[in-house]
Length: 335
Image (cartoon, rainbow, N blue to C red):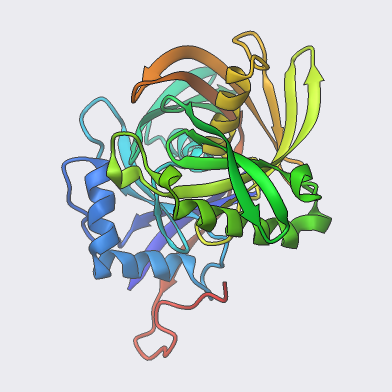
C-alpha cells in the first residue's frame, strides 16, 4: 500500500486529502459511492491506513476524491473519520476549495472570487474562494438547506437532565447548552465535554429522532453541539461550541456543517436575519462566520441556505507506505 496525501487544517481541524493509491469506488452518485465504501474491505483498509495511528490519530479527518454526480460540479468527495464515512463536512469543504484553487484543479483569477462546486453525500455544496494577489484569503461555503427538526427533546444524562434541539444541515445534529450541564466550552472542561457529547449522541441515536425525513442513508445522529451563548451584538449572535461527532471525536474548528445547524436554529428564533452574521468560535478560539443567504423548503420543512466562512492552510504532503512485514498493519486507535 502506497498512498500520497496533502494535509490542511481549517480553523485547527485536520483534513487529509488522498491524492493517489485509493481503489476505485463505483456508484452513480457520491451517496452511492459512500454506500460502496462502507461495505468494501479494500476501500475501508485505505481509510483505516490514513486515519489510524501511527499515521493518523483518533481525531484525524479526511476525504477521498471521487467523480461528481454530473458535469455541474468540479469533483466529488467522500468524507471519512476514525469510525467511518460522514455525509457532510464544512471544514473539509473549505479545505477542498482552498486546495482546488491553490493547485489549479479549478482555474481562478489572481484577484477575485471563484466558485468550486463539490458533490458530497448530502448533496451539492459550493465553496466561494477569495484570492488576493494569487493567495487564497478565505473561503465561504454554501451548504445544502438547513432546517430544524425538533425542539427541546428531553435527554436524561449522567450529568443530569437537559434538552436538545435537533437540526439537519447535511447531517443530523443535536444542540445542547453546555451551561445546562454545568459546563462551559473551554479547554479546562474538554474531557467532560467530550464524554457528555458522546453520551448524548448515542442516547439520541437509538431514539425516534435519529431518522432523516426522506433519505434513510442519512439517518443517525452525527454529532452533539455543546454551545455557549455569548450574547447578541448589533452584528448578530456570538456563540462558542465544541462539536462531538462519530464515536467521541472532537472538532477543533467551530464545525462547518454544525455552524449551519446553529444558524438554522438562531434564524428560527429570530436572532439571525439576512443582514446579520453569526460569530461562531471553537474551543481553541478559532472562528467561522455564518450568514443566512436565502430561505427555502426542504423535506417539507422551512429551511435556510447558509454560507459559512473560514480559512484553511496546507500543513504538509506525505507518501504513506505499509511494510508487508509490519504486524500493526493498517494501524490502531486507542479511542
